[in-house]
Length: 477
Figure 1 (cartoon, one colour):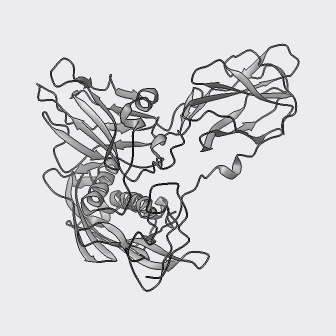
Figure 2: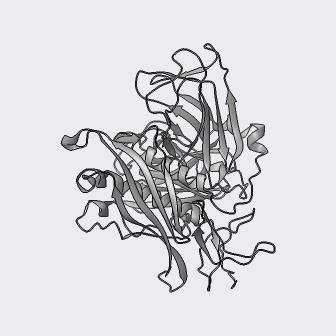
Figure 3: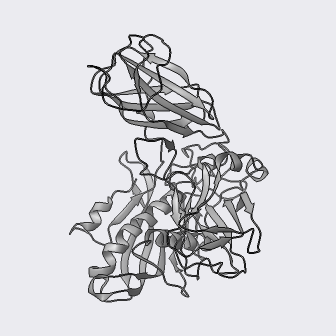
């Protein structure tokens, strides 16, 4: 959705006053690519063996096999077909026996093929593999690595606006750590393509704040990144892991969605039962455990009316902390602050430390920037709200040479994160309240809906529970 790519920050054209993001609706990007292919014939599954070289002239293994899912009972498969007289799609649900669900005669050589499984199981692990053979019935075949999609549970009303993880470290000897801790809510990206891959994937957060994190005897709640998660059931696991030799003992962790408890695990506060987390031992709650818990199944999210100041400051601070991992950190003992300038402008300050910055070593500074909301038009001439990040500055002389290359991609992430929040706004009449027309900043540093002289449509979900609906019925105040 951003009009500026991350590569732009490395070009000579960068100007701190032109970082612009247009608020819009994020859709399922692969939906149009997942077209159903005609069934040509059916046959039994061949021998299930690993991918290897060609078994005979004209039979080559498939490549670039990926999955997508537009709804809980549909999974789209896409792969690059090299050459084979026969191709079969096989499926296993939650570890059940493999079954052939589709068989094709020769598909076009050296082209992408796609298939839409419209009989996938909701709230389940749907695993697939592609088998190619010479169709002679000899039983010899080549089978792709598995790809598994954990489908949504159908509770579309559980739209996620905020994710947090509360972590309690017990008051026992050596329980705390100074190392970074990473939280994953999905399997990681970058998995080896020759083994099983799971979808959806990629959501993770490196924890950091302006407090002294994960110290002995602490109980702190961290904001998490929202990438790849728009509904609660996009969360497929909760995993804590850390590098380094310094262990941390976890007494308890709790996942919060929009402030509501979604899953909690308590290990105990004494030396023995608390779970020691280190480079050799990560702590994970898998899908089956999460989705069978009472908190998950009874989850009921509150109405979404906006973002308060504490929430927005915490979200921005978490984005900085996550993005600085490996390059720096948030400065302990300081505070991320916001200053209300007007309904269209919020001045932010974030204290950071950048490590090993050229010949300067560690650079300790505070980054300042303005969040600006203003009216504009989209490509169709419809009124929308534009989010800009302007007036980037820092409390150090070396902003351009040292901090800007580090900070600019982070600000891109900040704008993307806020876009994901603002796009949930639909300025419509709620009860007896006057109709709103556009998102604006509140005096305490949050984002709410304000009234104006004319509606500025934001394509987003209505401010009520229920299915996401494009807000196309704005009214004059």
